[in-house]
Image (cartoon, rainbow, N blue to C red; front, top):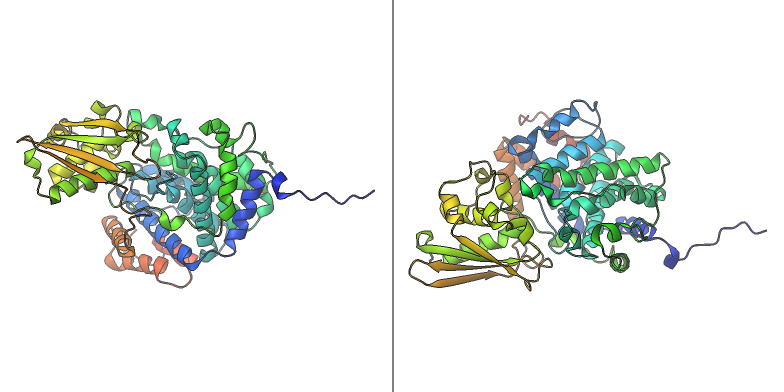
Amino acid sequence: MNSTPTPVSDSEKSLSKKLVAAAAEAMTSVPDTVLASARLHLLDSLGVGILGSVSGPVRTVTSIADSSGHGPCTVLGRLDGAPAPVSALANGALIHSLEFDDTHVASVMHGSSTLTSAALAAAESSGADGDRMTAAYAVGWEVLIRMGLASPGTLQSRGFQTTSAAGPFAAALVSILIRGDTDNGADALGIAGSQPGGTFAFLAEGATVKAAQPAWAAHSGLWAAELARAGITGPSRVLDGDHGFYTLFADDPGAPDRLDALLGDLGEKWHLPDAAYKLIPCCHFIHPFVEAVEQLLAEGLRPADIDSLHCHVPTGAAPVIAEPWSARQSPPSGHDARWSLPYVLAARLVDGEVRNSLFTDPIGGQRAAVAGRMTYELWDDSGFPARYPARVDARTTDGRVLTATVRDVLGGAGRPVPEEAIRAKADRNLRLAGWTADEAAGLIELLLDTPSLDLPALSARLRGADGAGHR
C-alpha cells in the first residue's frame, strides 16, 4: 500500500494556511522602500508611546510589569524588562492612548499600536535581529490591512474596533514570522481566533480601555503563537469556516473569498507606505474637519464672526465622533474629547490650535459655548471609509454661508506628508517626554539613518540603559 500522503492543492488549503504561506514568502523580499516606511512608522509609534508613558491617560499601565517577573522585553518608561506578552500589552496601550498613532485609512486599522508592540516584544524575547523584526512588522501590517479591506467598515458598524478585532491574527503572525516557525502558523492563527474583541462601549463614558484594545490584540496574538509552539492546535478554518471570524464578527460570509483574492498580491503590492500619520492627537475622523475649518480661517473668516457651524459627517464615522451630538458638544472628560467633533473644532477656533493640553484640561468655558453653536447631519455618499472626508458650512453673524470641503485626510495615500514632518513629530514628542535634544536625535538616527537596525541598541535607548538621562 502506498503511504505517501496526497498533496493538498492550493484550492483545498484553508485560508489560514494560505495566509501563512503568502506571508512567509513575502518576508523573503520586502522592498527597501517598504522597509524604510516600516522604520518611519516604528519611530512614529515609539515616540507617541514614550510620550504616553509620561503624560498619557493610561501611563500607570506600566505597573502591570511589577507582578509579572523580569523578562527580556522593553516596557516604555521603565528600565526593567518584562515577559513578551506583558511588554506588548503595556506598550500597545501607551502607543494608542493619546489617539496620536497611525491609521491605514481604507481598512481603518491602527496597525502600529498592535504591531510595534508585538514585533518589539517578539524580537527581544527570541533574540532576532532588528532587520528581521522590521520585515515581519511590515508583512504583519500588510496582512492586517488586507483583513480590513476584505470587509471594509463592517467590523466597526457592528460595534468592534477593527484593530483589536483583527489584530490578534496579525500579532500571532508577526511572532511566527520573527521566529521562523511557520509550521505552527495555521495553529497560531486558529488559536488567535478565540481572542478577537474590543467594542465601542467605551464611547458612552470615555473609558480609557479603548487604549488597551489594540494592546490586548498584541498580547493575545503573542500568547496564541506560544500556545501553538506548546502543542495546542487551532481550527484551520478560523477565517473562512461556518464559525469563522468574518461570519461571526462582521456578518460577512463573502469576506474570506475577498481576503483570499487580496492575498494574491501579498509581497508584490505594498499598502504600508499608504498608512496615514496623525499630526494632531485625536480621532482620525476629526482631522479633515479641523483642516476644513482652517481653510475657512485662511480665507479670512474670523472666529468672532461665526454664528454657527454645520458639519456634514460621514455616516460610518458619526457613531464615533458625533453621536449623541449633545454629549459630543460637552464631553464628560478631556480624554473623551478625543472623539468629540464639535469640541475639537471649538478648541481650534478658541485656542488657535489643537493642543495636547486640550485633552487634559477641564471641559467647559468658551470651548463648550462654541461647540454648543454647532450642528451636524449625516453624509451618506461621502466615500467613507475608503477615504476620510469632511464638509463644513459656517454661517456668519451677517448672514453669509461659507463652505469648505476636504476630500481626504492629510497624511494618507493621496496626501502624504514628508518624512521630515514625522521626524519633527517624533522629536517634539520625545522632548515633551523629557528627552534631551541629543537623546531624541540619537533615537531618530538609529531608526532611520542606519543601514541595519541594531535591536539591542534600540532596546537600550528605549529603556535609558545606554547611559542617557531620560529615565
